[in-house]
Amino acid sequence: MVDLNEVSEEEIEKVCEKSLEEGDVTKPELSHEQILNALMGIEHMAHFEWREAALEVCPDVDPQELVEKYWEIVGRDTADSYVTRLDKTDPTFVRDVANSIAFSSVAMGEDAKVIKGRSEMEYYVRWDRCPWYEYGRRYDAVEEDLPGCDKWCEVVIERINKYFGTDLKFETIKAHPLGDDCCLRRIWSEENPAEKYKDWDTPIEP
View 1: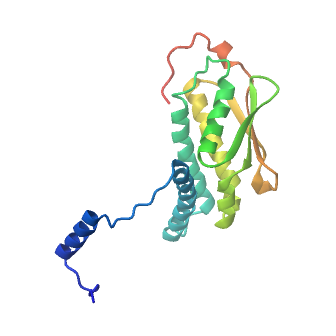
View 2: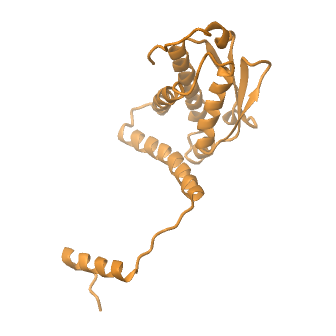
View 3: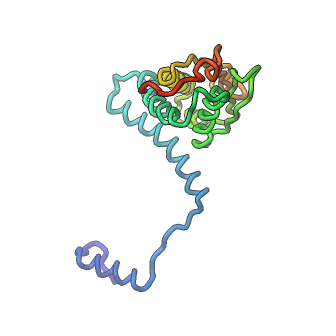
């Protein structure tokens, strides 16, 4: 009978070496899709677990203020990654911004699509399903969902405008937390950046 209560480091090394030599090893085999799906779930849960821990350690902090600050920081870093792939002299600039937002959303497991509006200066991003909202319900934090998303969009658009000197705008038309069947945001520009900045060369610093 092996006594599992007492074991030396030397014994551990010998046992592990023996099992490795004999091939008595188990390694989980996951497809890329399984890994990505697992990571997306971990990402969403980690946000709410972080929120729970922060509020327990700092009980005087306003949950809404904490979450909006979080999304402000995320929006800052997201926008700074977008500007490296955007060109305001391109006629598709407004659509490209909308596509960037949809790309980030799909990468996080959301069902997002870009819909053309009345011209090349107006596009809609529609989310038919969003795990952030679903996890918000699970963790009893739905009231923070819409303000958090709006803060993220606000900062993303603000920083893109600051970097390119453009005048993009956004507004939330529908939202799951409001009881709507989807989330819908309008992104538009009253001016045509491609025409106004056709001779633009060097961007300002973000």
